[in-house]
Length: 71
Image 1: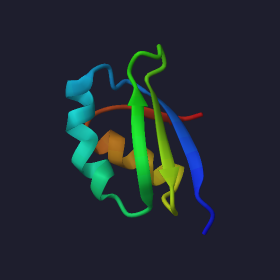
Image 2: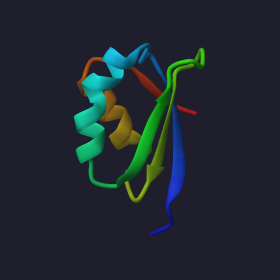
Image 3: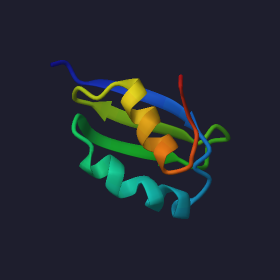
Image 4: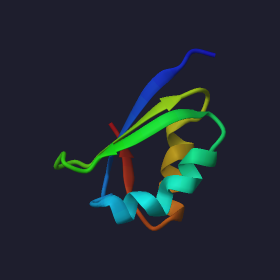
């Protein structure tokens, strides 16, 4: 399967927020790597996908009490 980058606008404002989703994203099947640009005003989450869908990523983020919107 082709690897592709997915990007999301989030409300992950700081390292504490990112740490709350870290283990879920690290252990999610279909994610090669990910990062959050908390310096960007839109708090952009970038995921290198190896099969995970945008909907699955949004569900993971929402489950932790944060918001994510596919760009």
